[in-house]
Image (cartoon, rainbow, N blue to C red; front, side, top):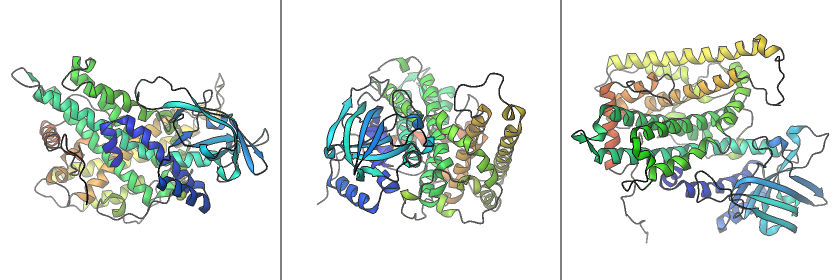
Length: 525
């Protein structure tokens, strides 16, 4: 929620301050002594870390990085350049991957991780690389950092020598989940800006927001934010409860939430029409700014193709784990009232053996849905429709995972291509497609779970389930077309969206108050 609050106001601030999260790598791979040292620094204030993984020539291919970290007695000497880096020039601490292996070292063990306090460099230099002009995030320091024979104490290394790549991937699973809050924040502001403008604009003798096409577009955009919130909430709760399972989960959450907000962006721009191209006085370019700034979420900390490729590589393990029933009480995952254990970053695993609690919970969710009795807002017809949709989710999941086995057994997968690829990345596009469709199912199951376990504590709009039925009706949950929504459901969605907008609340399944315009922060005695 804190991430959403900041991102909906200014992504430049949210992205700049998000680098603080990288200090948690000390809690993933560091010793107790290192953790105590870095905790003291952070609590004292003034720590501005940056994440220095990518290099100009290698991008997402971290195993190919060439910055070197040469052991020298009780020290390491670092030389090389990292770019593009968020806060590369202005950071006080640098989390950096450096090559410590040689030609005989396996690629996965070439890199080691260091947390370098720039004020503690013993000799040589650590300097900033000039800022990169960017499409959005023009207030961020997107630059780089260069090491020239920078000598650091060996205690700057996190984890064992050669463990850097694994630590990097474990950290990214956390931050990819964290990215969902950035998407939800920008998505809120874009929808709020467009809905406010169209509600005040008079066309054809009435508010433009009441034109049926416009009204349904707003309803669909609002619905996407609600489903994206479900996926985000379940993922964040899962980090506490099923920490070892995020090698698949974190990627699916980031891809789907960013994808839903990105699709909303295009649909809302189309709804704005010519005003999309203008820095109109009504909203002083707020929509366009959020569009530019928010687009980065699907790119950084692993782009959508990178995240989907990671999932695709783990599909055989997911197939193997699927179908083994788990007799578990899923309340802690889905019930927003349930207490959570403390988050333990060191438990995040780079390979979760195909386990995913959201997929595993589906049979239990179907059973719970079967036992529901009709209520005033959710009659037998709607319950029957939801039960049918939930069963379809199970069938789609089974079919998708069966496709994995078919694809891997196909002749194309068994024999070299007529024209061999010159890339070391050989994941079949068909498996990437399966990973993308799995992210869609993941969000739908998350929404079903949130609804089932919270309908007695949230409002009537949430409890009656019309929004959920509409979401599950979508072929791809991130996409929608004109005419998809039942008119009564569209009306209910728009009415609730407008009520939250005028009451200064988040666009959320819950009631979350925003500060009134111009309000000052409260002070305490």
